[in-house]
Image 1 (cartoon, rainbow, N blue to C red):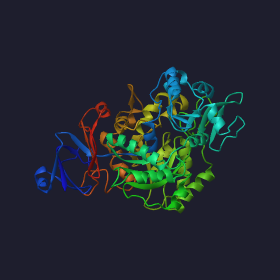
Image 2 (image 1 turned 90 degrees about the horizontal axis):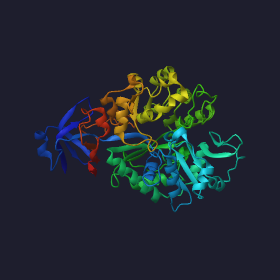
Image 3 (image 1 turned 45 degrees about the horizontal axis):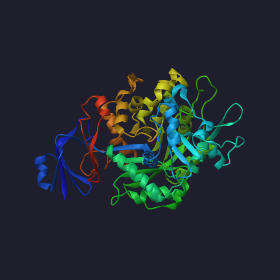
Image 4 (image 1 turned 30 degrees about the vertical axis):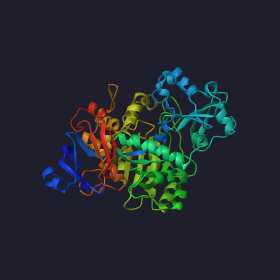
Length: 516
């Protein structure tokens, strides 16, 4: 049975403002495009778009899908701006699990960048509690959490992380990077079945936002890697919940995952590059920078030694794999470029540079010469820019998120959210790319990009990142029948109206999976 979509504005993403009159789909693929008159005789089902806008479904090239699903069920503090309200929510939060796991703490939401302490948390709950900072590179715990893991003020900091201490050497409750990962691992009480529920919950939300494909990194956080991996394989697929995921493979479990040699689901659940962490985040001042943060001697946190980083890259290369590296600060970026120049990616593949927040002219030139792609998060700039200049100064801030410069150098950029670190709605990212505006302030306006280039990052360029540019990201013959119907013409309305876009229908593999 072939289905014909017609009577709307159908953008192909082949070129700016390129449209077709009708699209015929069959067996999960776009069979033909053309006029209604020439295609109607081949159709057995007709979908009248009633003048609405249709375009390829969107991809988010860097997020954490399991955590999105969990966040939809757990307490999240992202939008709380009153300290007393935050404390009341934490005090009232109850679960039947042995740990309280709370997400989204952001001290920038509170007066004077207020950071709650372990002692204050002790007054709110006596259950072991971890409140994860919005960046997911740090968090705060109570005394019960430290006691559960036998952590005291005399416990040594792990390599690549630390337990914050006050001037008297006492633990404050705040834990960073590898120390934070230790605490987060202790909260895990998941099974393949429970994670499958988290995945399904997250997928249905993403489908409502027009997203059909995500690149996610989840395999190292929920016990044995088989637990989340089996959850994905059991939950998604052509004959299951229709959604496409590419699974970046965390450095800690990479060799085990490769050795397991599982059977994946082509075009639905696929293993992707080795994920490596080079540094932390700006919010916690753990992004690794080449010059100290303003008013300090601190240059951030280097997760790996140069030797260890090179060893990880060589491990990936030995398995004919690319790497995907979290890098925020310019020194972290420099270290990674050194490593991939020394140990090039296998022919026909490309490495991923994730975040690349703070750049320098010399680093941009080096990136342009390498077979790399960049996973960017446009809403990072609107989240970071109101305060990050205080950390690094105005001169360095000119090289924060220079998206237009990167595009002009011919570098492939894929759009993403890093959700649940940021809101996952892709239209917020597209708006940020087009305007670089937040609350009336425009940050480095010379780095805005065109509307078409912004949408490409979530369609055609996202497909290139996972080597699917010939079957995904466009409305063209032989491509996946993955597309969305929108409540407005996103190519002609004002940028602010783009931000308010609502998805009316999402189709994946030819099947409607969401409809408003």
